[in-house]
View 1 (cartoon, each protein chain N blue to C red):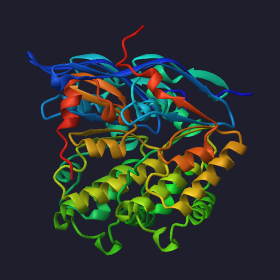
View 2: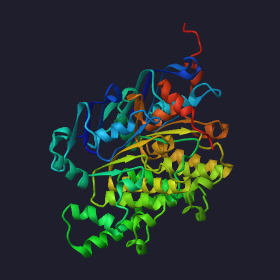
View 3: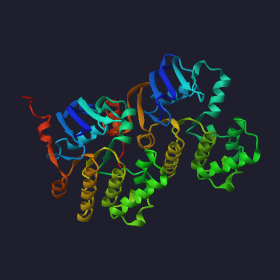
View 4: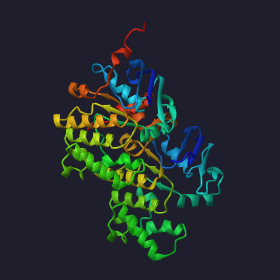
Length: 258
Length: 235
C-alpha cells in the first residue's frame, strides 16, 4: 500500500428530480483496498457506484483518480472519450447480470480478447493464449473458449465477466452485487475466486452488496448507506462486530444464522 | 524494558438502538501496560469485559474513551482514534490475535489459512507454507488434513489451525482469546511451549485463559478486570 490514494470522492450527491439518489458521500480509496458499500434496495449504493464509475454524472461533488502516470484527474471534467478509455483499460465493471457486461452472441474467447484489442493488442495468437490463460484462472475449461456465453450457466457467465474485466490488468474494479442471483455453492466458489484474484493482483475494488457475509469476506473497509446517505463507515469487522448506528444494528441483527 | 502497549483510561459501552437506546456499560477506566517479553492475563468472571478489552486492542470494537498507545513502525500511535488503514497496518505488522473461533473461508486449505498472515507481510508463499507445515506438525494436526479447508474440522482441530495462524508471524504484540479452550492436555502443553518461545523472543502477550493449569504455566501477572467494571458507581 502506498501513502497516496487511488481515488478521492468528495461530497458527491445525485438527485433524481427532488428525490435523493445519494447525498454528500465522501471517501478515499487506496491501491489494493476493497471497500464494500452495503445497504438495502433503494439505499443509493448503486447510484453511488454508477456516479463514481462515471456511468452517471452526479448533481454535485467531485471525484479524482490518480492515473498510471501519477497525475490526478477530475473524472467529471474528462472528455467522454477519455472516460471510455479509462473504463476499458484501467477500470473494470462487474455487473450483477452478466448479460449487461458480456457480449452474449460472440464466443467466450472473443469476450476476453475484445478488451485486449481495445488496448491495442492485434496479435491473434497472443490474444488467444491470454484468453485461454484467463479462462483457466476463472476455472472455465479451455474447450469452452469458442462457445457463446448464452450456452453458459449463470456462475460461468459471471466468471467469464470477471475474466473479461481483469484481462487488461485494471487497477480499480467496480462490482455491483457480483454474487447476486447465484446459488450459494456457486457464490462460495465465485467469492473465493474473487478474493484470490484481488489479493494476487493487488486490485482496488468498490463492491456494492446487500449481503453482509460477502462484504465481510471480500472487503477491509465498508460504508453503510440508508436513504442515500452514509450512516456508518469503518473497518469491515469493526462495523459488523460493533455496529454503532441504529440502522447498522438493524442490518446486522437481521442476518439469519445457519 | 520496552513497553510496546499502554492502555489508559479506556471505556466501552454498547448502545442498543433496537432496544430503545438502552446503554450497556462494559468497562471503564481500563489502564495497564504490557512489557516486551511478558505474558499478562486478563482475569475475572465471564461477562466482566475481558474479551471486549482484547477486541478493542485489536481495533475490532470501537473505543468510547481513552487511549491505546502502540509502538508501531518506529513511532507511537493511538489505536483508539486511528484510521481504518492504520489499524490494518498495525494488524499486519504489530498486533497479532488468536481468536476463540476460526472464521473460515470456503475452499482455502488449512495450510494456506495458516500461511496467509506471512504472505500478507510479503513473505514468499513457499517459505510461508514450510513454516505453516512445521507449526501444524508441532500442534499435532494430522497431515492428511492440511490440504483441506478447515470448515469441516472438529473444534479442537480448528482451534489448532487458528493458533498456528496466530503464532506464525513475528508480531511484537500478541493477543490470545482462550486459545486452549477446546484442546486436549497434550496440545495445551504445546501451546504453553509456543507462548514460552514468544516470551523468550521478546513478544508482549496478553491473554484470556480459563484453564487454570495453562494460566499458572504462562502468566507473569494477572490483570483483574473486575476493577474496571462499569456497573460500579463511580466513587
